[in-house]
Length: 112
Image: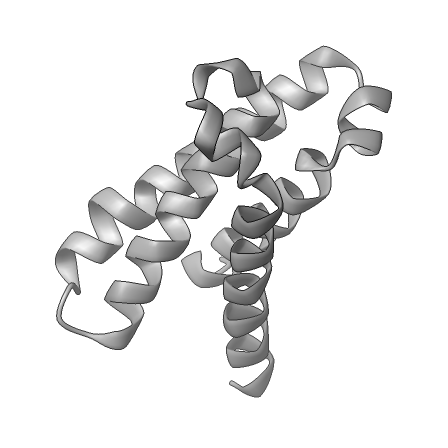
């Protein structure tokens, strides 16, 4: 069985890949919908379950921040028009922050 941190990290990577325009435009809509839904589910799990259980700890706060970024990224994949204009304009910054959390999770997992 895979640890949830590994699954969440893989979902972050998938979100980063599918949120960039060349991949999203070249991918069939059902695949984007599946990936967006999985990324959304992982982001919700991070925020609702893990962060709420471990809020005072480093990884709880990391789960909260990365979960929110994953939720936003999943909406970029599913339908970016659901987001306010200022969030759509900050897409590059949001994806860069998610990349930072992805690296934090991945490096930590590799060191274990």
